[in-house]
Image (cartoon, rainbow, N blue to C red; front, side, top):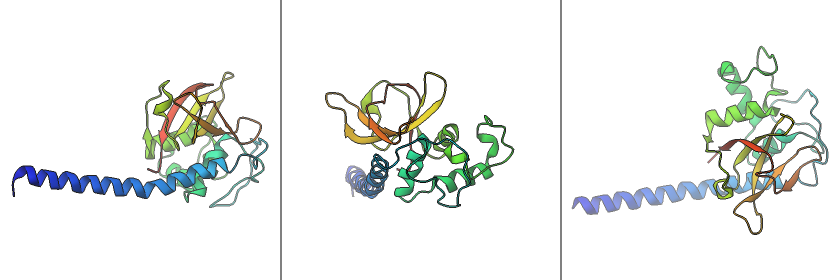
Length: 198
């Protein structure tokens, strides 16, 4: 067998393997995006209070929540429990997480509901991608974090719904009026761009 034929067979095999892997990830990605969009019209308010949650799969009532709950519920809809994933990672590597709240140990009631903690988790276990001003760089299912004008952090899920006449997608987020799907990708200062679970 010639080396060029061997190389062609290996490349074809690799291509088939990568396509199969990508195809396997598509249903999970679609399910996650669907989980984000399904919150619109259901989650109608914003509640940033501390709540005692069940563990695992703990959640505040679906009618309310914060921006992080959009992301948590989207991933949970696809079978990933960020409450558990973040808590277990914080137990293993507490020093890697921000100390913005004076916590001395992980708390499964609140840690996963804080934007800097989710950003740290996605950086540690997913892909941290460049922050750009090109809408096409932000793919459906990507997670974006922002710094709002008054300094607060914010997070949302890039949807699969294009903004007409642009190269960007609508974003599912909750900035105070419940879960919304809006053209806000570049409405605030983007501080992080992540891809997790694919």
